[in-house]
Every structure is written in structure tokens, then in C-alpha cells.
Image (tube, rainbow, N blue to C red; front, top):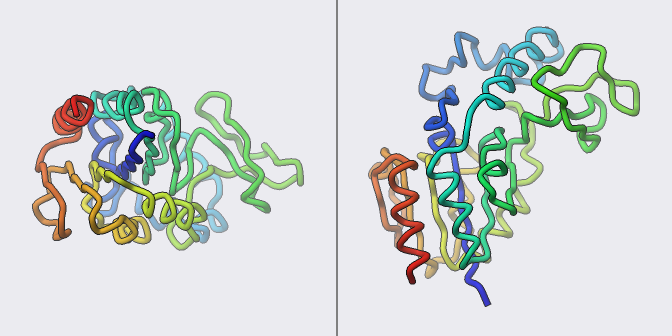
Length: 228
């Protein structure tokens, strides 16, 4: 029976594919204040601005390519029962070949109903237009969890973390809750490895630290884990 390996990834792994993170730029995303483009209030106030902003981000995601860390994580499925829990809204894990992915904060390549968030639709290309509606007739919005909204997948993710024999933390400094609390659900005796340039600032007991970028650190660890 394969060991259960749970990976929690954050913005650092996508940054190496050229996708900007708001925490690296003083609360700005490409010049936008996050509260003007990433809250339910912003959507109510100026849906055109929000839609345009996410269209641009979607275009960037579709132009980006998975990096060495994404591909290495997919290789782990040769030997382990792997679930990737990601805070990222891009589809780079999917494109690299990982088959079991939980998106905590949504997936930018999908749209959701403004009325019923369970109504999801694939977006063709990069542009989601005003006037495009769901089956209920309401406007489609990006399938992204905005600041101030509940994180619907958090309980499922916590349950997965409870089953981990091995736990990898990649490209995150555990600054964003509730995702940052997931590590508390990993069994104390399970092996834990963190790969992040700022990893030394984390104080997690029983955890091995590699203060490296994901593109360097993940392939190293994956090679080690596959050789066991």
C-alpha cells in the first residue's frame, strides 16, 4: 500500500513560472489595490474592473508554463498516494501531470454563477465577458475565493492532512489563513519537509527545512523520496 503524501503549495511555486504574487508587491497586484479587485464589495461596486483584472490574470496564467517543481511533484505519483493542496488559482499543477489536486482558493480557468457558487463552467480562452450568464441567468464571475469570502474546501483539505504519512510544504510562508492552519492537522509523528527561501522563519516542530526556491528544492527532495 502506498504511503500518503500530502503537498501544500503556495504562491512561491507559481512565482517561478512568472506569475506575480500580491504579497511581494506591497499589497498590489500589477498596480491594483487588492480591495479594489479581490473582494465581494469590489465586484458589487465595479464588476467591469474586477472582470477585466481577472481576465488579465487568466491571460498570464495561460501563457505561463509549469516549472521544475510542478513536474517533480507529479513524478511522486510513481511511488506515493499524492494529494496536492494548493493556495494558487492557476492550473499549473494539472498541466504538469498531477492528478489529485484540491484548489483552496478556486481555479481561474473556471467561472462561477454570481447567484450559486456551485454552478461552475469552463472558460474558453482567457476572457470572461460581462453579459455571459449561468443557467439561472445571473452574471458569471471568476471562480476565485475573494478576501472576506469563506474557503469552501478548507474542511476537506484538513481531513486530507490528517491522513498524511509525509507532508511537503512548498512555496509558502504560512501567512494566509485559514490555509496556514492546515499544518496543525498533520499527525505529529508524520515526516514534514518545508521548501521555501523564507522557511527558516517558520517554527514548526518535527520539520525538516530547505531554504531553497521550489524549482531547486522540490526536484532534490523528490529524487530522495523516489529512491527510498
